[in-house]
Length: 321
Ligand SMILES: Cc1ncc(COP(=O)(O)O)c(C=O)c1O
Image 1 (cartoon, rainbow, N blue to C red):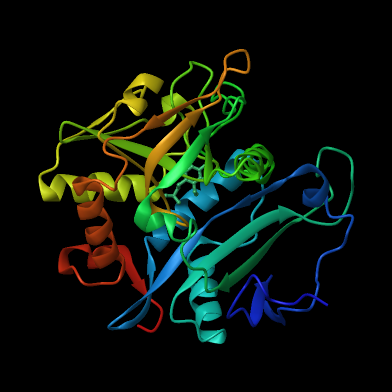
Image 2: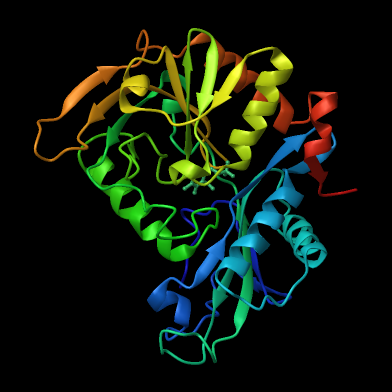
């Protein structure tokens, strides 16, 4: 019934302590989360290394997962250690060398009043092989579209949590950008500054200095973003954190997305459609080609996640210890 065309390598998923065949549904259509987005999730990657598959920054992802659940006032049925073990077991069960891993807490079946009082929180985890999120754009750079919808503001929602419902805005704007032929959407925040992509942070480079924004700009402070700031420091690339204006973005020498799914994806062209009253305008970032600092960060990040750099092995959780 459920084929795995878009989930290569997925054989089993984990649900509340049991493995199920990928094709076997296990959730009632009247589950609370399906109707109201009462779920929280994580996106985690595992990479093939010389010592077998290793999950990148797993404890940090699970800390954020539990934080997201607490924002939604969920009573979660599993501890951090239990979730980590379940993920490792799932990797083994599916015999995956590399994977995208998706744990999900959701308010399940019980009632459909808005308050999920009688809908217990359940945990489901899937894992499959997922290649480059933006495909060949990772190499040549993406053309992004600044959408007219402003990112949900941190005064309206706790944007440090990965809440299922919030991603409706991401899905709509990701679809909008693609329907117009762009590679990805970019949100401004209510202050009119650059916020983030639908599932990615944004970093720029100007005169050798790396810059990104933070949660005061209504973004999720990604684990990849933090990793890149750490790597940049080690490589001697100076960085700063603060609001990124639209003009700074357009005049940057380099720009790129960061995120677990997208990894590091250069941005070489921007179409600004943020103001529906003004006609849209195109901007080229830097030379329109992937810049040197971006290339250096892409390479170091790739080496870090695949266990080729000793000092970054601290970020890896090996599946077979
Ligand atoms: C809205 C949003 N911003 C940024 C990110 C990047 O976060 P991370 O690097 O932790 O994957 C994500 C992905 O989780 C996201 O969904």
